[in-house]
Length: 528
Image 1: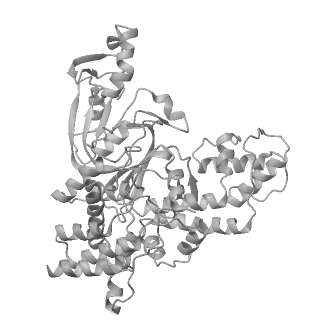
Image 2 (image 1 turned 45 degrees about the vertical axis):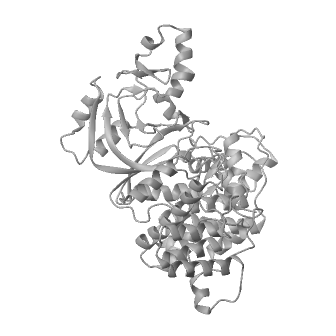
Image 3 (image 1 turned 45 degrees about the horizontal axis):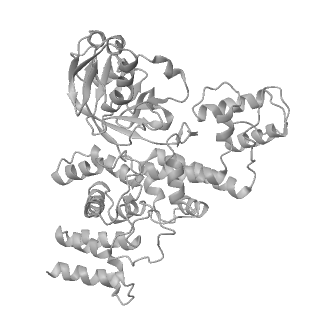
C-alpha cells in the first residue's frame, strides 16, 4: 500500500494544481499543464487522472515508471497520446512499427500489437474515450514507450524525455516551433541530427524555408495558367522567382518561357517525382505554389514521422514510401537499390505498418478477397457465365454465403509470377503483376491495397541471396513453372510501410503529393 498511497497523494496534488510541493518532488514529476484544453489540444480525447492511478495500481508498476507516466500525462493535461476520436494517431502507428520490428515476443507486446491492429487502417472508427479497452490500450502504449526508451536510448533521461515530448499535445505556431527546432531550444536537435541522417536533411531545409517565410519574397502563382515554351507572361516571372528561391535555377528576371525556365522546371520535376520533360502542368504549378509556411509545416510533419524510424538499422530492411511509389532495399543502413511500386488507390489505402518478410511464393494462386468477390466477381458472373474460365479462376467452396474464388497460376494471374509474404491482419503483401504499363506512370495508386513490384525477380534474388540453393536460374524457373512453390526465408527481413511527403537525398529536398490526405489531417491537429 505504500506505493499506492504515495502515488495517490502526488497525483491528487498535481491534479489540483497545488503549488505546495517539495523541491525534490518538483524535479521528479512535471506540473500539470491546465492550459491545454479541447480547443488547443492535438487530440480531442482526455483521460481522468484517476484512470492513470488505477492502471499503475492494478499493474503494480515500478516507482520510476509510475513517476514518468504521471509526468507524461501532467505535461499534456491528461490528453490522450495515442488515440483521437478518428482512431490511432500517427505517433501510435510509428511506435507500433518500432515494436513490430523489435525482437520482443513477450505476451504483453504480442497482445498490444493484436489490439492495435484492430485500429490500424480503419478510417473514422468513432473511438470512445470512456471505453475501458481504449483507456487500457492507451496506458499500455505509454508504459511500453517508457520501457522502450529506457532500453533503446543509451544516454538516459534527456533522450528518453525527448521521445515522450515528440508525441504532440498542443497546437503550435509553425514559425515559432520551427525556430525552436532550428535553435535547439529543447536540446533535441543534436541527438536526432547525430543518429538520423534523414532528419538532419529536413532540419537543414527547415532553416531555409523559415528565412523565406520571414523574407516575404515567395510569389503566389495562378495555378490555372496555361503556359508553353516561348510564351511571355507575368506569371512566368513568378514561377522563375519561386524556382530560384527553391534552388532549382539561377536568378532570371525575364518573363519568357525560355530554355532557362525549361531547365529549372526539369530540376523541380525530378524533386517532385515527375518525368523531367520541362513542361508546366497542373501538378508542377500546385507544388510550386506551396507557400514557405505550408512547406515549414510539411517539413516538420515529416521530421516527426522520421523520429519513429529505427535509429541505427542493422542487417536487412525493406522500406516502402507510399507517396513516392518506391520500394527501398537496405543492408546495414545503406541503400542497395530501389524500384517503382504500385500502391492502394483512394478508398483502398495501403496501411502504414511494419512486419517481417517470411515467405516467397513462386507461381502463386490468387485467393480473391471477399470484398472483390462480392463487388467485382459476382457482378461479372451475372453478365458472363464464363467469367471464371475466361479469367483462369475456379470456385473452391463457400464461406459466409460467398463463393471462395481463386485464380490459378499462370500469365493472367493478378499476382504475376511471385509474391512475398509478411503475415499481417490487413492481407497486404508484395507481388508481381501482369499490368506492367502502370510502372511507366509518375503516380501509381491503382491497387486494392497490396503493393505491386516493378522488379519482382530482382527482389526475389536479393531476398534469397543468402540461400545459395536458390540461384538466379532456379528462381526464374520457379517463377515460370505454373505450379505454386513456397520458400521459407531463412532470416526474416523487416518491412516498413511508410508515408513521407518530404525527405532529402543528395542534398536536395524531395516532395510528393499527399495522396491519402495524411498531411492535411495532421496539419489541422498540429498547427494554429
